[in-house]
Length: 233
Image (tube, rainbow, N blue to C red; front, side, top):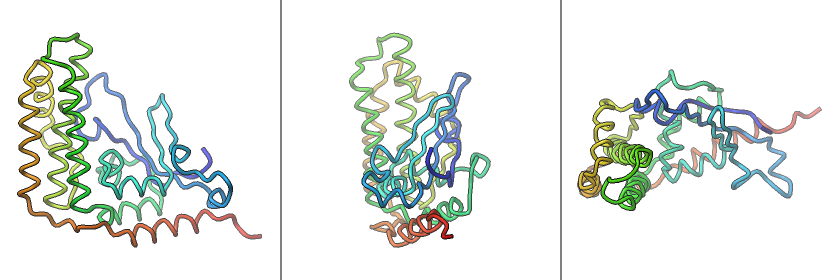
């Protein structure tokens, strides 16, 4: 990879406390591409700004792309900024500063739209699978989608109400049980969860601002670019 990793850690089911014996360990990180690359014809943006590997499973986003995703409150990227300290595997000075400005990325409308939107996507997947009378493999995937639907609702509401994202679930077993119940055919539980979540978001008071603090994010990104200029000599 052409660049330097600034921040990386273990995310996903392991971070939530939902991992089982056969679960993969997912890693997510932020890297800084050399600043000079942004001055050429093909800067590392879009798809070129993400590096995905397997064995181990790892996703790295270039700093600007990562910032853009977090400004949209993308749940998958946002959680990297709120991991328990023991789950970070790489943490540079600029990575520390990124964690330090994590509140600059969040805003009430985007948190609601992103977390509730992702949860609703999971629900649509469940709806498309019928009444639970399917193969063991499909049932396993259905249970996974159901528990992540519940997790997204729980974490999104928590962030919306408190301004803090609790990545580690206090009661992982509840989410595991919920997933199995939905996979067994109780789709109504998932539907009710989505309906209640919409009402809870509407009724909740939030300390989050209406807009993210893009100036603070931009200042951090400018420092990243300065730090990765070629040395003069």
